Length: 146
Ligand code: SME
Image: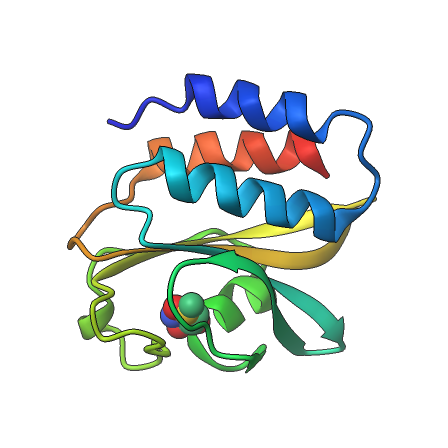
């Protein structure tokens, strides 16, 4: 089980009083990418128009630029507004492979003023690397920041 205690405090301190959502997305991506084992791609896809996500701040390798709500794991998260945990991306036909090394993935909805503004995506090069503990801890970080 990952320990999110320190990184949660760091992100809260860095984002305190910051109103700009892109600035906070960049900070959250950077802090989690460098602090957490297995976080091989960390970033945000922003809702830029109805039913369309575009990549926002991220850390890691190449991220696909645009994802419609009806495509991929990120699209499913945006569409259903429910956290998606994928233990093995190879088993999900609809998964969009930005990197062939990705094995598992977690995607959470991001709200500002109760409106969906983005999804937050973490990819791991290990199979089955995310669980409900990660979902809860990441959800708390996002809720506190936006
Ligand atoms: N795998 C995601 C696409 C985003 S990248 O992994 C960075 C998906 O299926 O939506």
